[in-house]
Amino acid sequence: NIGYEGIELEDPFRKIIDQFPALLKKYNLSLAAGWHSTFLLKNSLEKELDSLKQHMDVLASLGSNTVNLAECSGAVHRENKGLSKRPQLTDEQFTHLGDRLDIIAEYLASQGFISAYHHHMGTVIQTADDVDKLMANTERLGLLFDSGHLCYAGDSPLEVLKKHIARVTHVHCKNIRSSILREKINNDAPFFSSIVDGAFTVPGDNSDRDTEYAVDFAAIINCLHEHEYRGWIIMEAEQDPRKADSYTYAKLGFDTLNSLVSNLEQIMVFPDQYQNPND
Image (cartoon, rainbow, N blue to C red; front, side):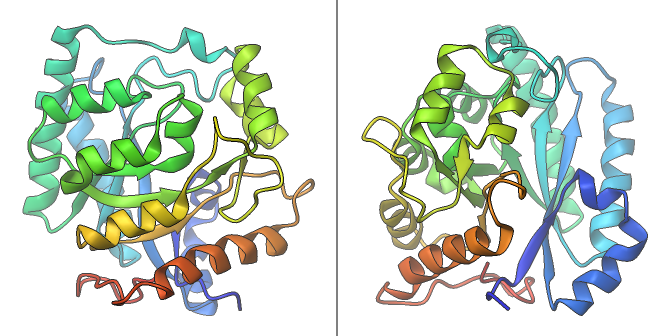
């Protein structure tokens, strides 16, 4: 037992959703959150709310109240296309999307759920500038901060965190392998190929990093602590287990983040609705 207390609902688990409650209980894990793709730029709001409600029912049945949202209209992160082909929004589209996401966020809040918008490579909200515009066009929407995706987008994770810390409701900590990322960016590679080839790794793996693509996890944890962040910290790697031993890297990532949190003067405080908040 490494020490993890939570896990997220991603697509592979949906294939065994009937078995999921038993697996969570077996390994004494809480469900921290679950990904939900929105298509607000092409579907009616009513259709999107119906889809969201189904997702909320699943999360509630598994004891979670955090929805990781990502607008996937035209997204290329799951397609065999370079990231340069990802859609980019006009100011009018940002306003339209922001209005609808705030309606979603308000509905989630009314039902006791937390909204956490995931900026993601290959989608309409990818860069720090996209995040800035999204935050400017919303008021109720929470932000999922992801260190790896911001680094991939060529932005400073810490600067984005400091700028929008008041809106952050969920955190993903993942690291970068600099040489692989640089190759993928230079070749305008599809996002999935970056996953398979190991562009991402865990906090604490500094075997392939440089100044340009370094993620300062100590500074990130300190920033969260200083601003009294109350939520999950999720360790991510998104690696091929055939190339990177799952246990080895999972333990390295946990030990690294746990050490950073434990070294703070005060233990981070989490909301009462989470049964096992320290991830």
